[in-house]
Amino acid sequence: MEVYENHTRLRPASYLQPTVSNIYHAPPSSVLLLLWLFKWRVLVTIVFLRIIYNLFFHPLRKIPGPFLARASGLWRLIRYFRGTWHEDVLTLHKRYGQVVRISPGEVSFTDQDAIKAIYGHGKHVSKAAFYDAFLVPNMTASFFATRNNNAHRFLRSRVASAYSMTSILTMEPLIQEVMDLNLRKLDELAINNKAFAIDKMVNYFTSDVVGHLAIGGMVGFLEQTKDVGGIIQSIHDGFYFMGNMGILPLQMFWINNPVSKWLTKKFGGDRLNAFDVFIDWLDSRVEERMTNGLLPTQRRDLLQHFIEAKDPRGCPVGKKDVMIEGVNILAAGSDTTAIGILACLGYILTNPDSKAKLIQEIDGAYEQLGLAEQGREITFKEAEKLPYLSAVIMESTRLHPSIQYQLPRLVPSEGFQLGEYFLPPGTTCGTSARAVNCSREIFGSDAEHFRPERWIPQSPEDEQRIKREKSLLMTFGMGSRSCIGKNLATVELYKYIAQFFRHYDAEVSNMKKPWITKTQWFSLHLDFLVTITRREY
Image (tube, rainbow, N blue to C red):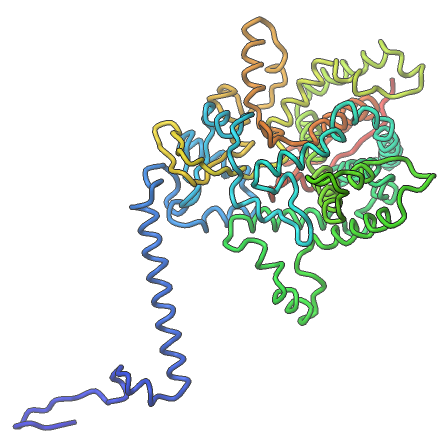
């Protein structure tokens, strides 16, 4: 305190004055605190300015969407991680229209012209950086994950013949072998007359099918009635992380980097990336086949097809190439089909009139074809001729497509006019199969309702409408990037639904909430409990 001419003035102590000299002479802990406070002030300022830019100066600022979604990518990230995007995306488009801003730099749309312009054949619009999250460490890029259109064209072409309908139908007896085992297991459950999780049983079925076709034999899911080795859960967890980390900066680096892996082991964890359980299992089978070759007692399977493929120079492929093709069919090929089957079961079992019509049609086909007398089950070619069965499958998978996340693409160099909005080059845009398939502008006012009859034409006008609506369905994607496993999924769907309802009368345990839907890239059915009894016919 200093006194001047009877006036008292307080001067702050010197250690409180933020001079360079004070900081230099301050204890190390104080310096660190000041630097920490400065760093956070800078960070908060940057975040604040970024939010202001996103809301008021961004090129997409005029496109409607939730305030928080326009401000930050955190809004969508939360909804992805909690597994409700199948509900959120419908709510968004109902509220904001056919064009919605779902994050500062990404737009979701259901506009018919835009769907064909972005996803249609011959458009060559590149995938967005989101798909980099699906690049598996120590493997080559898959035709699904690669963003290079030329690479995609080559990678897809070298395995396309294995997924053709002709190829799949030659393997139909193998699919029926798995279905026969599935029916025997269902018979056991019917005798018990207790509720069981059909979502798990269907997953076991589709997983054993791809195992039987791809690696020369069933894995054992149905036989043991369990998730052998935790493989299915590993696949679910893996796609959950890849699908969600894809919208984060650095994506899967947060999990796959050496530091994270070291810390996981250091603190007693087994592995941070649950997908590694499946990868290790697949690696052992690929290594064994590539080392020993196809034994005389083994039949030729898809794995052998992948091993004998060639690279762009015409040379034999390496293990990394074979592994990624195994991931494509074994990881992606089982869940997508299981979800389709469960969608059909769910909508049929919760709509008694549709169930009665379907059973009547299936029974009629079995009798007309004399299948009982022949002691065999209906084939795919026979089942696909049933109009109501076809309509039920089309309608169920329309309402509940297997993948309901956004399928993002990059706007090309010339930009893109999306309705009244112009999207600059490099903008991420895309749609969700769920949003498109339930769009009232495309499928009418009852777009969200289960009505198989919409796919059965009653007039020439109906035929034109159905043709147009089929061309806009996003159930299996669209254009050159559409699902390569569509033929396999279709065969399994027809065979499973026809044979299930021929042999069993089923009821859901809880009609008010038959199942729980959790969308985590795959849109899974969980806790889908049913009771079944063997039918008399």
